[in-house]
Image (cartoon, rainbow, N blue to C red; front, side, top):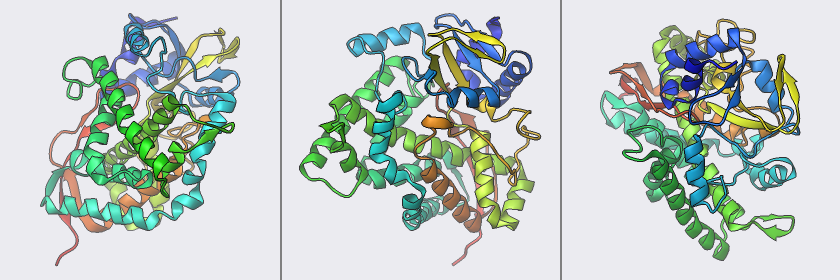
Length: 417
């Protein structure tokens, strides 16, 4: 049974910018209707899956629950605008996120080696040097800064552009387009027309990476951009739309979720000073603490799956063709899995969070994200003391991928000379 108030909240981007609102919503659904039928005005109906076990069950059955045709919360009107702009195609980009079956496996395999843990570990010193560069910028600001806009947005972006082989001078453009692609529903990001902003950002992304593709096909280098540009599937070059889409998912999702985890992780430590002190006192906790940050922030708010056949989930009859929304922030605060889930604990172990998904579609870049967050906080906590809020943080109004928009802080450098 649908619940009009809950249903409109679930599709409203403002819900995901307020942890109290979203937390209360999902807690009520987990308790009273964990597989909830959503009928929101202006949206095709779908099931909201809010329990950890159920999200896990759906994700592990990739043959029954597939990614196409619906990937995220999107109004009927916006879907029609995309189809009109894309010649009938409802996808703005065709990435491994939207693929299924053998195609998903083959396209994922193109870049898999770049993100294997052993290969990612070889990047540690480069990543650490980049982290130090941005902490230098933080230190140069004096004793205060907007941590999101001065540091957290830029550090993982520089790591991704390094791997892709994109010049640092292009980073402001990449950042703007990524924000417009994911945060288009936020009035501070899309000043007038949200969908027009999103469509324009994707067009500019494709134009930019069209030039990158042309360059790497003429002059391949030892970078990820060259791998994508010259990749083949079943012995044939990748079609242009899929090639450009591949760049977009790496360049945008590859840094946005990590920057959100870093900023949200720092806010959690500031708001829980005893946990900050616990981590400072025992730096070996860092690998455990960053998993709690990923759980706490859950930067990917949802993905959709579509049932290929009738299926029963927690007593609800899912019909073939019906869509299911995997509610990751809800699953990651499930009382049946996490002891005191509303408490941030730097030493939480075990921590079976689903921030990276699970099954065939688990996040390809998670080893890199873990390395980046680990290295960053090792360097940050060694270099700065007395980190505290200097104002009220704000979050992006977006229902798909989102995090903090501002984080004003004060701090003191522990290094002199």
